[in-house]
Image (cartoon, rainbow, N blue to C red; front, side, top):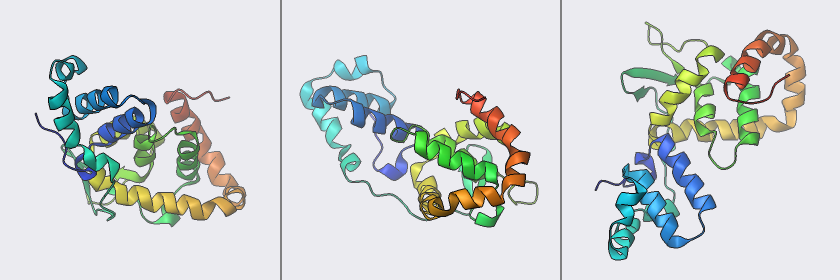
Length: 203
């Protein structure tokens, strides 16, 4: 059975699922079974059909979950299947809608459950010339699905970059948003539409 060898090898979906299991399952054996099943793609029933000794041996291979080590570089390109994305690292090109969304997902997330949503805000599809397209909230759900398939080692650097950006911007967020009132008005329809797609209650 093939198991990931490090955090860098986990897909974003595997990372989200593993994080949820670790946070919510308190019983060691049940946690081990759920983690092994989730990260191997096997059913829980399949894992439970093996001996405790085998389960603990597999669980030993997942020791890296207790010692997170992730690539912190920001890639020039992100390849997900046949699609190519480019991380947005020029803060001046970040729209008010993207900023609001990033902050919203950060505040509402329990653990890492909204990680793919955050990534969908800052990884943009490329155009025919290899440049990043403008952010389009209508494409958010589609891009989010691709982000779930991306490897953590390829997206963590960009995610860490933006977590730092949000931390630095928080003290001046209110001022920034007031200055960006016109931009917010223009993009609010997009933000509200995609918030509804994500199941959030919006007025």
